[in-house]
Image 1 (tube, one colour):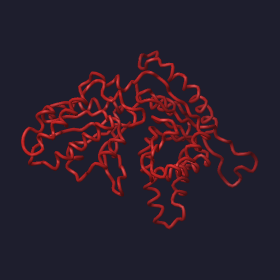
Image 2: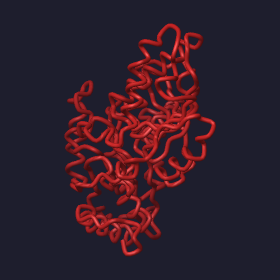
Image 3: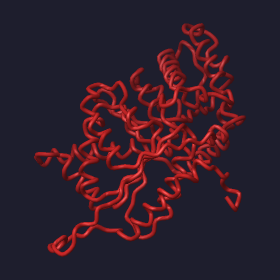
Image 4: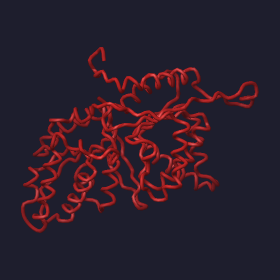
Length: 361
């Protein structure tokens, strides 16, 4: 703040003592006692409660967590997006099953416990039943193994996996979160991410001249992260968003709309990101009708989820599809593309209806 890089925010400042107490404990206890005589002469050190930090979109949750992780000295830690971490867990369990192990989660959790003392999860949300059925046992094993967990979320623990299938089986995990993590609400009135995009150009044409501007937006929103593929399980299939970092997804039009993807796939993408950068939207017509239909479905999913869309296109929305079958129906899509360019787009969303924008003022 003294350097002018951050704005003073009392709500953010109120969270710092909780994180500082965790930092001091972790640096005093950076490793677990291991070996043949571990625990014979002293009781194992019980880790303190972790932190479950929740609040509205853009309030600074991820930024606070990044400051905390960056301030740690000599502590094995990992900061990871919750979606990406659960993908790794599923992959590890798949590989473990090949060995015939009775509990495929056991060796996967044990590997995490060996590697880190602190796990920092960004944007915890549970939308998939397979995650819901695994996450409770996973957290129990990690916490029992002495791993300290810090996580951010848009919603309080009680609203995780809300209205999900077989949610009754998920309720014990909510009790575990309340018991083992401090639940703190970040009640800042400021939405910093919207401030960053407010008034900024988010629709560029022609696409060929927009690459530099698009890259600048990506760098600004992700901290110049290179990004990595995000794999989303949908009805037993693997839907891939080519680049993902800090809650921001990025893909070309052809990487999403030229593939045989349907409403469920686009809905999963809309639920997984808060910002989508979509590049190289072409001129559309009856000659590429199926591709255009997928684009319409994608925009509908993003619109309903209040995802912030940044895109480059061949022309203005109203001139993307001007003739042939489907041109009349496309008028609604053009109207939505216009609406989604508004400075206030996404501000009126119901809390918790979609993942948060990256929270870095």
